[in-house]
Image (cartoon, rainbow, N blue to C red; front, side, top):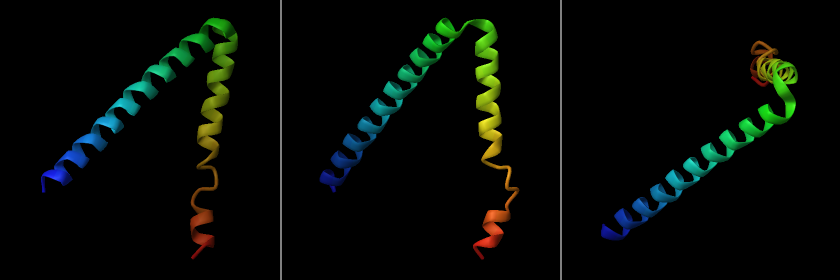
Length: 68
C-alpha cells in the first residue's frame, strides 16, 4: 500500500509541476504577443481566436447525431 501512495504522490507532483509550468509559459506567451502586436492588432487577434473557439461548436450537435 505504501508503494501505491508513493506512486500517487509522485504522479500528482509531476502533474502539479507541469500545470504550473504550462500556466507560466502561457502567461509569458500572452505578454509577448501583446507586446509585439500592439493594441489594435491584439484586438483583432483576440477576435479571431474567439471566432475559432466558437466555430468548434458551430455544427450544433449534428455531428453527434450523425454518428448514431
